[in-house]
Every structure is written in C-alpha cells, then in structure tokens.
Length: 265
Image (cartoon, rainbow, N blue to C red; front, side):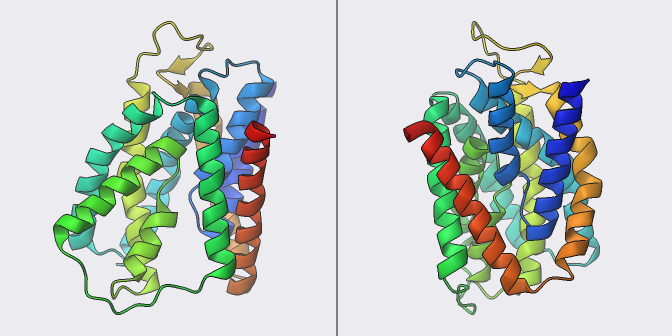
C-alpha cells in the first residue's frame, strides 16, 4: 500500500511539473523511478531500463489527453506528422534494442548530459528563427527516427527535440507544440509495447512486471498524472513565460547534475 501511494505521489508531482512547464513527464518520472526502484532494492541491472519503460508506458495516458486537446484546437500539421511518425516507428525498434544492450549507468549518464544540454539551450539560447523552407519529406522521416530512438533510450516523449525542429521551418509555436504533443502518442505507445514484450530472461526482475514495465508504478503514475497535469497547466497560465522558461532550465540543470553526480561522483 505504501509503495502504491509513493508511485501516486510521483505521478502527481510529475503531472504538475509537466503541466507547468509544458513537457512530457519523462524528465521527472525517470529520475524519480530510478530513486524509487533503488530504494526498493531492485537490481542495478534492470532498474534503469524499468524506469525508462514504465515512464513511456505511463506517458500513453497523459500524452493522449494532451494530443486530443491540441487536435481539437487544430494545432497539428498532419502532413509532416505522418513522415515524423514513420521515422519514429523505425527509430523506436533500434532505440529499444540499443537501450537493452547498454548498462543502466551509461543510460543515466547520457540522460544527465542530455538534460544539461536542454537546460543550457533554454537558459542561454534564443528561440530558433522561423521562416526556413521545409526540408524534403525523407529528411523529416530521418529526424523522426532520431527522435524515436533517443526517446526510447531516455523514456521521454521527444518534445524537447520535436518542437525546436518544427519551429525552424515556418511553423507557429502553437502548431509546433501541438504536432509534438500528437507525436508523443506513438512514441509512448511504441515504447510501452516494445519494452513490455521484451523477455528479461535470467535477469533478477521484481514481482508484478510486464517485460520491463512495472505494473504498480504504471498504475500510480497514470492515475495521478492527468488531474495534476491540468492543475500545473492552470498555474502556468498565471505565470510569466520567461519565468517559466528559467524555472524549467534550472530544473533540468538540477536533474542533469543529479544523474551525473550519482553515477560519476
């Protein structure tokens, strides 16, 4: 009972922060689950992959809600989304396969570096200039494959890559964010399914898992994240945009340093 409550709290915090900053929950959920699984004595051989897999599985619920909202607002470029999604489908298979061949510590260090990069871009770099001509569709699919592969390794929805890419090519910010939100659905769905179908073999898996997905953690995250995400979004409407960007940059900086110091310190 205590464990289920803890997962529920993680989901509530992740949903609130995700709604506040407009990001997928993976940035918060993956580090939190790594700590939670470590505290429960899960094997280091599997706990990082379980955190990634469970984050993606739970994201199916939250990303669907966000995608539906943007769909109703007509903030989606379906012509681009089809090519991005096709690339994501290919990249997802390679991403999961590559992730399962990496040590958990390597994934945490790589994720920490990624978060530091994102934080630095938010804090110090200007928004990408719009107005460039849209690249060929085959190039869009390659970008989708890269986004899908990286998302599978880190357990994220890919918005931190998709939105900057779309902003460079004549898309308004609302359409870039909306298209990214919809793309998060196949990313989360493919990730959750692919990790759930894996056979860990002789690895020391804890009870109540489906492949690498922790069922209790998935339920707690999924139930708590939707109402809390709406709460975070409500707060975000009342705060200045620049303050939110700085707060997210500092948050990403702290998360990145935490993962690096945890594994390299």
